[in-house]
Amino acid sequence: MKENNAICRAVDIRKTYWRGRVSVDALRGVTVQIKRNDYVSIMGPSGSGKSTLVHILSCLDPPTSGEYYFEDTLVSQYTDLELAQIRNKYVGFVFQNFSLLPRSTALDNVALPLVYGHVRKKEKIAKAQDILKKIGLGDRMHHRPNEMSGGECQRVAIARALVNDPRIIFADEPTGNLDSVTGSEIMELFDKLVEEGNTIVLVTHDANVASHASRIVKLKDGRIDDA
Amino acid sequence: MRDIAERITLSFQTFKTHRMRSFLTTLGIIIGVTTVIAILSLIEGLNRSVAEQVRSIGSDLIFVQKFTWVSTGHRDLEKLASRPDLTPDDAEALTMLPAVEIAIPDVDTRITILKYRDNEVTNPTVVGSDENYSYVNNHFVESGRDFSRDDILHRRKVGIVGSYLATNLFPDESPVGKELMVEGHRIKVIGVFREKGSFLGQSMDNFILIPYPTHEKMFPRNTRSIYSRVYGGYSIDVKPVEGKIEQAKDEVTELMRRRHGLGFDEENDFEMNTQQVLMDLYSNITRVGFVAIVAIAAISLVVGGIGIMNIMLVSVAERTREIGIRKAVGASNQTILFQFLTESVILALIGGIIGIGIGLVSGSLHQSVYSSASIQPVVLLP
Image (cartoon, rainbow over all chains, first blue to last red; front, top):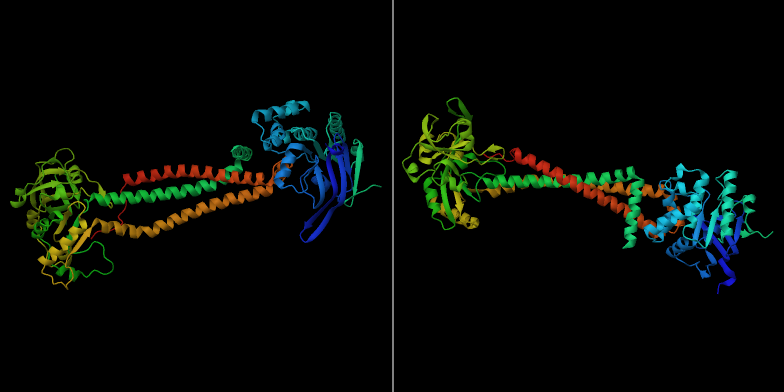
């Protein structure tokens, strides 16, 4: 029995960083929930803790305290190895700077999560090819990132996020490095993905981008800003 | 297993995408391993070739002489000269010993030149010995005949020439039956020895063997020269019974002391030289040098290793972005660490294998140089 159909459920999450001897409280008690097929955008000025929150929600980092449930499993005490497996199987990432391996082809970049998922080579390539075709990059499979436009790079990154059929996709400023036309194309792609049943969390400080989401979570000084 | 195979595949993908960096990293190891292997095989080859040459003088002979081949410090020539000469009678007596197969008298005189018609050789040795010389010293009469007992007893003016002398004096004909003028004496050539090669840079085939009584008559001892008194006399070449060299040494010492009438508190007035002495001297001289050379070569290997370490360190820093991406798509810290380790190990292995290959090839090249050209003298025999 899945409680509230939630994929992510964070309860009173705190995160403290140590910069040398100075501690920085990035998150000071955040409770948030993301449901299946949700389209959430997280907004807030820089330093508000939105990246930290996404890192915890996406299982990149464990919280300092608080409880975090991913698919109703308490993962806040998981080891690095266990978190890596969750990221590999259930989470997709899209970054502002595309974060593609510069010397690898689009196909290899898309197949990367499958490498760590121990997928057979044939299946791996077939899956990566399918996704690339679906996203309209069938003719770019053997191009390297520097041979493609920013929009194409970001679409390769989205294909990589989709290749392992994730439960949830985190997109950190996905249009930040793109011009407005390409940016809105990417946003349309996200809208389409949500229509197809995907769950997406957008991190942005662009209100236009945030307006695509069905729900906006605002962060300020490490807390949710309800105002 | 599958993890390892995957990591290796990943490593090779990295090498493919960073060809230059991978090559340069490997280069240090290649050079290091090549140097070590080449130098080791070079030394090994040198040692073997010296050992072979020493052995070719004659296997396990004991040379009873007035002087020692290898001495430390000053040589008291007066004392050596005053020692009793060794004689053909000594050889006869030593032959009777149980651990001695045979003992022969052997006297060498170097002359300046030997001519036959228009041909000449310089500095040949005139050896005086008996009919067992060829057997004891591993010589083989290739054409003509060896000495008979009669040749010795009747002090015949006959000789057997070494191959160097034969080919240089008689380039177009057989020397057998020809007559040579040796220091004003007519010597008839009755045989030719098979080639023996060179030892310590000197040809062992530039000599003529004549019966020792003939030699004695042709080259009377200059008793006023101290060098002649020390080095000019007979050496007794003792061939011990197979495997009984130590026992033979004891018996020879015992008998020679008795023949020279030495009291039990007097020291030996003769020396026993063996090839082992030469080998020991050679290894003593070269050992320290070899160790130093190998140590220097090993340093280059260490430097190669540091090279890999540096590149890996730098590439971790340079690849933080890549590490971040890989972590985001599901690599754990452990996976990343093992990937870097696998890359280093594979690079080191590849470098090592290539280095061993090049080292062996260049080592064998050096060895063929050794065997074709003779090495320079390490020990100067008196």
